[in-house]
Amino acid sequence: MFVTLAYIAFFLVCSWAIFRINQKSHSLSKSVFIAIFLGAVIGLSLHLIAADDSKTVIGWYNVIGNGYVNLLKLVAVPLIFISILSAINKLENSAGIGKMSLTIVGCMLCLVMIAGFIGLLTTHVLGLDASAFVHMQSTLTADDVSKTAAISLPKLITSLIPTNIFLDLTGARSVSVIGIVIFTLLAGVALLKVKQDAPQEGEKLSAGINAIQIWVMKMVRIVIALTPYGVMALMAGVFSAYRLEQFASLLGFIAACYLAILMMFIVHALILVLSGNNPVHYFKTVWPVLTFAFVSRSSAASIPLAITAQEKFGVQNTIANIAASFGSSMGQNGCAGIYPAIMVAMIAPTIGIDPLSMHFLLAMLPAIALGSIGVAGVGGGGTFAALIVLSTLNFPVALVGIFIAIEPVVDMARTALNVNGSMMSGVLANRLLKKRAEEPQRVNAN
Image: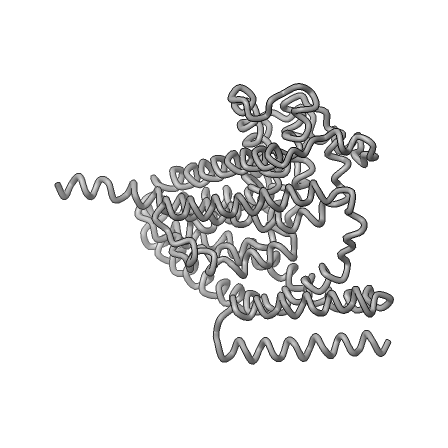
């Protein structure tokens, strides 16, 4: 009991120190960085010198860590709904909404296919293949496989369209966030029509939406201000529970995943340079989001942070909302791109296929894109994305079950890359749409 009280007191002291630092610097990134360090120190000390009391201590820390995650999920739905609706409210017509959504989805699918290629290339260069893992027991169940059976693109697209908005508001479906975005876009188009056909009623609606947006944003900012404390608690939990010896036989696979994810972050930085953006400024802006995604392993909970970070980077409000929302369920660079591609690269040589042949890449990359939508249609992150891709390529799926045991270790980095991929889609779509909007102006000027 004394150890538990001591660790709770130490956490409160650290929280007070972070609060004071934040008051002076007004820098969320700096506070989060300090919180990561303190959380790691607390977690390692629990792991090394107070292992017997670690579960009790982390149970209390989870009140802060998991409570923070729950609050972010709480404000995510009203934030998505009112932010998109408010942004559409400022438009003159509805012509650009469809183009905006398609551009964002197109960016997501392109990025996830690039991630798939990076995962394939990294694994091939490392020389990792499935034969080293054949002696291990797969934990894959028949139910897991059946969830990915008969996956077809028409079915996946249909599953994204909401039938009951109140059901989606409760988060009952794996694609609830996408359903809310689609409903909000429909409501936004209807709002513009009302402003055209009944200006007086339209003005009342417009004023009400603007007032609600201000209110919701105040709530979101209150929750985001809690980020350092939530991250510190979550980081302590990660480091106190980490058991390296349990994963010794799978370290090659873990190393391949982390190396491929690092390479994809470098590719993201290069894409930023090529699109005329400053990668240093970008990563400095999104650092708190990536940190939270890493320790929480939740793309959905990261939505409010991802939206705010994109807006700070200059992304239009509507684009930021759609990109962060869609990215929580589809086009995930880590779960749907790199993870299944690594398994494909490991299996291919064992069945006599050159994974880098053009013929095979033309089959695999569309399968990766399909799998990234399939994650939204089925749910379950990297495991189901891998099942969809391997099934589409007619590869054996038993390897997927072997790596379920170490998913939490890999999933931290995967989730950070997933969230960065969604934000990158917003940045790129914002750039492309701005460029298209400028071209007619240049023609007219000439």
